[in-house]
Image (cartoon, rainbow, N blue to C red):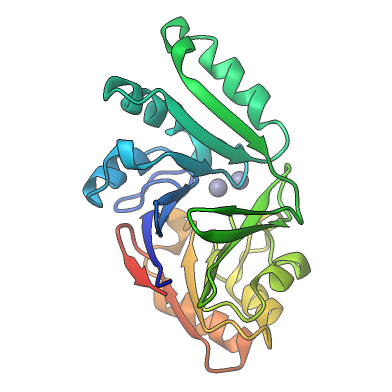
Length: 249
Ligand SMILES: [Zn+2]
Ligand SMILES: [Zn+2]
């Protein structure tokens, strides 16, 4: 099965022009939404997708820039006559969602099915195999590998460049990896270009698209691509993602 990934938001918790917070859609039999930060719901409409088409959302972690629009998405669907939504996410997802929803009694009729995902879990959705890997971040966080018989794409969520992500992404056709800051930032819990490239050197990934870009990356995009490639030291295609970019896999 051919897949298409649409980047909804390539930004972060600090707003800057042109980049909504985290979100992307994998279009398969049914579209799968990964993360739903502030602005992702608007981007969904701009990508030509109705909230009614998004029955399933997979969360990498519960930071606001990855989940702010989830309740808004569920409400949009409710307004349009759909009460059900399935949410997959890390430990804590159910408590987080129920606490939030409890503030809005009229949303009690929403039928939300929540599945807790742990690193190493595998399940099938929309004709695809989904595998979760452990991200290295400041709270429980996941990356996801999305695989058909013909292709594999990986979304890192927020993470340091990590051996667990390298393992998850081995041989993938597409890796959408966060790269929060340019060089020479020194960070934990997030990725920088040389560190990212070095971590995935020899992992056999065909194409890397950078996302989760802080305002400090503005004007540094080409340099970041160069630095990732310097770390990789191979012919992997590397680019900086942009909101509403469609990527065929
Ligand atoms: Zn985060
Ligand atoms: Zn984030």
